[in-house]
Image (tube, rainbow, N blue to C red):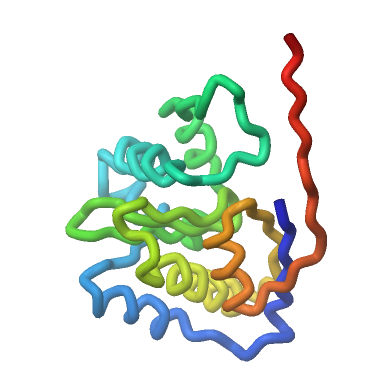
Length: 171
């Protein structure tokens, strides 16, 4: 696991429109959790499907020896319903299918079918631009994903600390 920090006031002002237009040029639209709550009665199920799929290949810092345990719909709901700043929680869609998300609350993830296309980078860049316009001063986040580390470093995050977790199975 690595922790990363970016100070928004130390970086050039970003442009939300440019980042999200880069996705729209690829046929991927960007919306917010606030909008999908209001306009898509199936948003919770669609987000659950995206989150479940996105966990494929996602390094687990606390692995369960029996394998990955599915995250129940109720857990997703408990994360999304009280989410602070739903207008700053961005969801990328391809023809209505949820393919990626980013939020300062629960992180960034991309469906495996859409990885390595720059979607996480553009979503995260748009999120940074949005945070700058809201007057936020920075963000600290952590990840065990090699791909996400590359995205964070590309966007100006710097590693602040690392941890190694040792797991011991008791028999």
